[in-house]
Image (tube, rainbow, N blue to C red):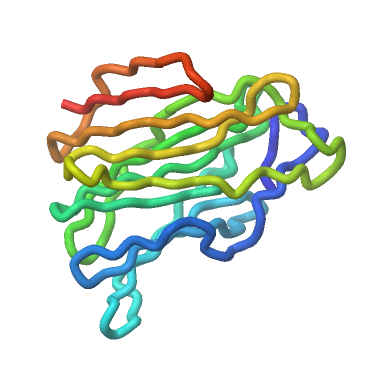
Length: 198
């Protein structure tokens, strides 16, 4: 279960099944799922060899201050990786938000950077009004079909009045050590943010 700032209702982060797309790249399968680490939700990423079903590498994104859940992953041919997910916690402003990490796959392991805030949550989420508030299993991260340096990630975040909203973010990777340079919100049905990395 995921935690929220007011502590009155935990978020149902579902179970450890893979709930987002499994990505195939160069004979490898990339996937993520939510697991429990010391009573906190965490994201476990796994890379499998498609021919042998052997685990090539695996890692966990966890932090004692936060819950991580509803992850999705994408990779391009040069090994750039984007992982989109939700994060929440018990700090005063740690509402359910939309986040990402950018990483690099060297053929045997993925090295990820730190959390990037795509859209902060705006309030606690209490649709049902009890323990185990159901949080939707909506998360997708995809490589743009016409631009191998551009990734799209679609994540939910907690809005006001006990509703959820969708954050759509484009992440462009132009170097091995990306740094965010521009974030442009566009008003629409949900919200659209564009991160340009230089």
